[in-house]
Image (cartoon, rainbow, N blue to C red; front, side, top):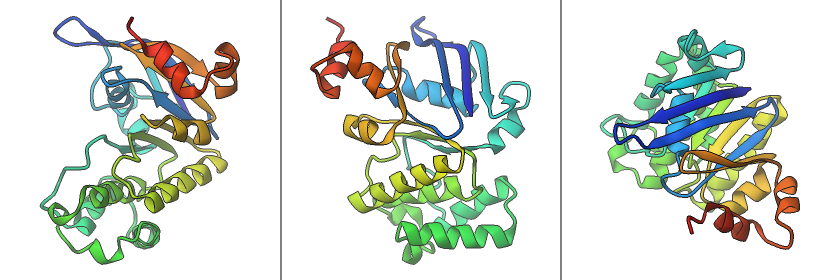
Length: 240
């Protein structure tokens, strides 16, 4: 479960990247975070993971308040950032083990999870190679494996499908569905509206840091009748 209460983030230019955001992602839900570039999605996700602090408001990850119990809250999270170009001098297996060490994953458990996830994403032959030799898509897949190695209950994914080949994208979407079917939660940002339409239980649409809509796609389409999701999105986020 993810619960956000009135979080705001203002940068030095006095522009609010996130403006009084409220959101609940219940157990068993996939929620899509949608908005144009610069809407505040990545800032919001970084606040959810504790990378940056909100100016005000509260964030709960499952039962833990992120500010009061940061370590316990972060242990519940699996986070895929919007850029997979990190720790590139490490081999894939070294990076995964680094993350597993941080989350104190027992050796026996991590070995099985690494084996299973590497097989899912066809990375078995790449684990012993430096990540700087990987393509963007391979780096993205390695980020996914490392993110899931500690079996987090809450997934926070920033544009996770960018750079993935169709088979790997299908695999990730399948894992997301399996994850929520076990009573867990997923929040992910995307620019691909078709993905949100097919995958999400609910969507939140933001622009200039403000919430324009939060609810089911059925509720959104009832509000904007006779329009497809793309036209609705363009109309809602137009600055004209």
